[in-house]
Structure formats: structure tokens, C-alpha cells
Length: 119
Image 1: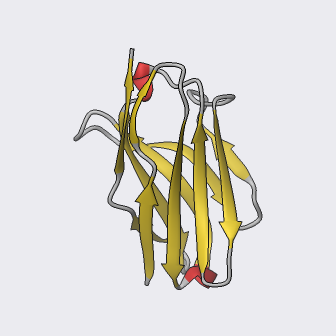
Image 2: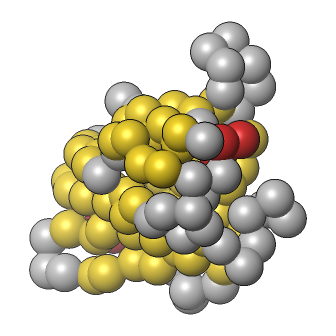
């Protein structure tokens, strides 16, 4: 099992910055990639924002390219994936979810953290 704890959401004005973090613990040795998705409004399809693999290869959605950066920090018993968000726009408002792929093709999702960008 992999456990995820997310942090960093909140309210920010357009043009501002936020940093989301997701700490994974448990069977972290089986993690192949970590990612951030977002969903807005509730009920709509979740879209991939950014992904980083075990080998630090990154994928970033075109809608946030140049504004968002994904990174990961490895520790002995945890792995943290960070999403640095800059030049935020009102259309970035969404629930952001951390996701890890582990033990083959298993997905574990975080509970989500709300990011609200005011105009």
C-alpha cells in the first residue's frame, strides 16, 4: 500500500504562485511515476497537469507549460512530488489531485486540494 498526504492548496490572486506537495509513504519502492491531475468543475474529467517518472522524466500539459514545474524529492522512507505553480490564471481553479502509479499499473489517489485563483 502507498499512502499520500497532500498540502499547499488555497486562494491566490491571478498572477500569483502556489506550491503543492504530496508525500508518499509505504511501498514507495514500487512507485514508477507520480503526477498531479486537476478537475474542474466537480464531475468533469480529471486532466493530467504534470507527471514525473522514477527516472525524473517529466510531462507537462500544454495549458500550464512554462508556468508549472513538477519535481520530486526522495528520502529514505518517503517520496515527495511538488508542483510549483506560477503566473496562475482563474482558469487554473480546480481540485488538484496527487496520483502515484505503483506495483505495475496500480493507481493511488490523494484526497485532493482546492486551488482557487481570483481575478
